[in-house]
Image 1 (tube, chains in turn purple, blue):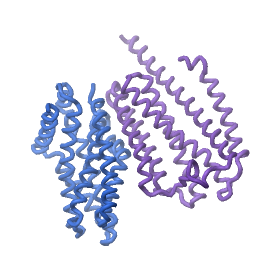
Image 2 (cartoon, each protein chain N blue to C red; image 1 turned 60 degrees about the horizontal axis):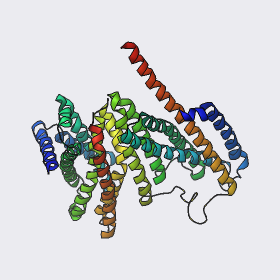
Image 3 (cartoon, one colour; image 1 turned 180 degrees about the vertical axis):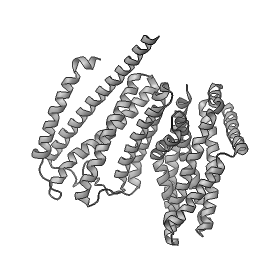
Image 4 (tube, rainbow over the protein chains, first blue to last red; image 1 turned 135 degrees about the horizontal axis):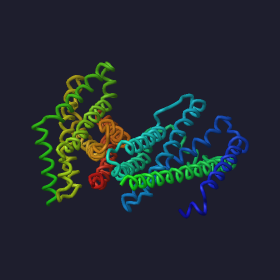
Length: 229
Length: 225
């Protein structure tokens, strides 16, 4: 509620839009052209930013779930649910931009390489989590059951991280944070940061709006109950 | 000590129910055999290819028939409000989890024995040279898979369309247990070196133990009303 006063959603939205305009400018005009993949490589900024946000969103689902089981606060569950819904959209974005980029860069739409597979599993985890939320028969149990699934899903995401080292991989690992000889041109780095910032800003905007929606929904149910009783 | 008695009571009860109704094990075995049977006609493999495809085939048969057991495990308890009786009883919910998990492990072990025997006969393939390693891999892989299945079975019992919900929950999370088990099984069938086998076993065992412990810790939340 304090957040709503000092940083209202309308201001948040305007900042997000402005940030996106800057990000688009940087992606298409400021960032230099990549030598081998040429213009196609510019999708990287969208792909990478969505991927990082989708992963981070699942971490938020885990945090929300843990905090719900511990404190039993409705807001924690709202946060987990909102993060899952918005994170799912970002994950879809990764799975759409990935093949679009892979086709011209590798010549194939898809390969069952470790990182692609683990992103696909993340997408399935989001679906499982969201499906569970809508199929639980007793409305009072949704929070606990989805928290349990959220935590197990996060354990899976950690195991993912270890397992892709044991399993086959063709995805370019060294591009970011890899060993010597990897890394990006400084202007590309700036573009990555600004784009990811814009994506995160949009993420938090959508999450807070979704949480507000959940809150109003609960108040509405409460009012209805008062009216009928 | 008391927990052990509870675990044993639930385990024996599940086996006794199964012995009297025969509603879980028989369909599981038939289903596992059908997978092996259909696979034979879907691929018509030569021996070299069989060696390559067999580990995946075995684990798909185990995974699919496991779903049948996990679905029954808690859905059966809903009839006559047995689950409520169990949650009201002054016992540790984790003991219910362990008892159920042990029963599911026994069911899966029977299916695994039947499926492996059928595969050996139908594909003219001898499992004997690597039997020791295989038993260990099956045991560890099944532990993780069944632990997840037991907790997700309990979660799915609270939903509409639970037959659909269980695989949707189970397969993405159990993915690495299955993949690593297939890898280890493949190594064992190929007669890989002792070091490779140990590494494979360590991975399967590590992942399975992590899932078993986390499921054990989370289970009490699933049962609370």
